[in-house]
Image 1: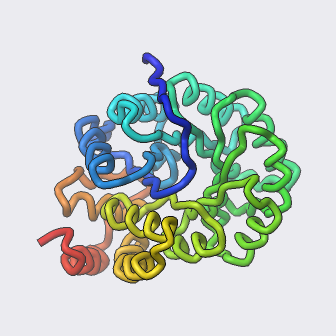
Image 2: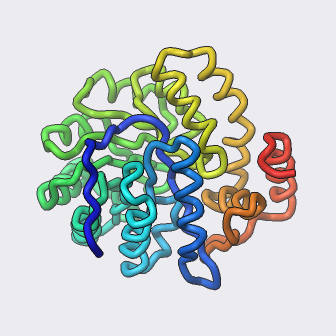
Length: 301
């Protein structure tokens, strides 16, 4: 595809959506993907993040993965940044996916720590170093030990700031002490983004700059308004939005992400709520809880 060039630099701040990948009949639903992207652009989302955990990247074929990145860039059409998920537990595969994202015109790449392999801290450093040396695109690290069984520690993260294109980290540990240590050690050399909707406001309060959000899939305007309210100094408004969003955060994790998010978007008429095995539809009991929360929030009738 033709690379799409942006004229302004990527700002690693604000509300970025960890976008679901819509399917229909087992295939990527292109029409629904474009609808979702237009929805986010219209509702204040600062960047689109395709092919992450929420995008079911683990079940996408290599061809599908690259296609989703290309379609996202095409549909966004330069209106907001695109941060392509390019991580893998194989360093060589992560390099190839990141090279593709760079060629396609993505503004940055999001790389999860290698899962299943359980590398040491030195292994993690060497993995990200190997990827960073092969591309010029900005890289955002992604630390989510609950998914990967490995924790990228602050000392290793600070060591990685020596590499000029490693610019930020999506922190989904939920551990404010560890995140505080990271911010203290690295300072402005590493931009910290929340990867856990429940702790976005506390992370902003200790120096974070934004979020890569699951909840933004269904409530992009309010997540964006909450983050930007805090960043401009309107703490009262930020706290009010954080409190209002809390039931939605809980609903998005009634079962494994992205099952509730896709089910909610289905209820909202945005997508066909299809998932790929081994993910299965939301249980009936949790479906009723989700519907109740969405109705209370005003997202469905």
